Image (cartoon, rainbow, N blue to C red; front, side, top):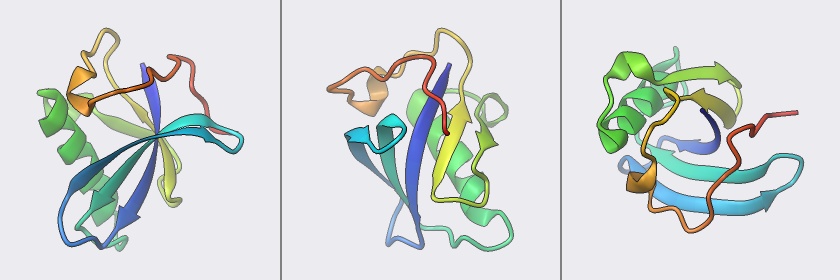
Length: 99
């Protein structure tokens, strides 16, 4: 299962902002704020760790598969992951892809 996320690095704290509907060219995007800076892959590692914690998954199960140097990323989760912990109001499609 893949989900698109938009990340704001360097925030005061790690925080789930929520879903943004109809993000141009992508569709549903999960918005996160991450305290780690976007330097030397620190924010990407923090994103994987934060999502793993929220979803009760091992860190090794969450992977950024596209957009490692962009604010919009495609994250791969294990198939069948219960994403209800992300407080979804609108369920994103499983085939969500970055352009």
